[in-house]
Image (cartoon, rainbow, N blue to C red; front, side):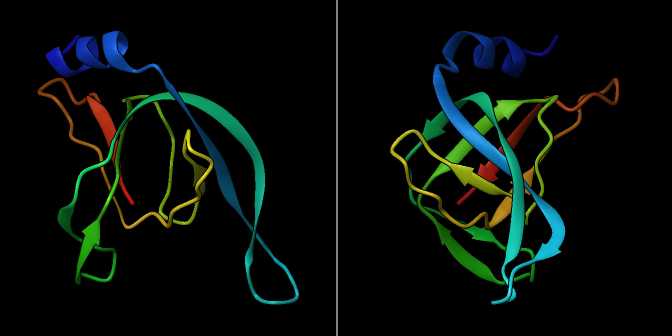
Length: 108
């Protein structure tokens, strides 16, 4: 187990809901999300510059750290503890020397 895994187990006390995107679209062309699941996370409200999925610089106002076994994609919808549903800008999932994902960091 990595140092980051231990920290996340100790400090992840907030609940973030992840609704996974489906391949279905509504009449307005908006992706229909599937059922949501509750995930413990560490939510940090900081301003950071990040590169989005199109390779452009964008401002992130919130970063969410999940355990390494969390499954999330750029098209999914997240609901933060304050009830907001920000757009996912970027996802980072560093791998340790054993090939295991240490944590998943989502930038919104």
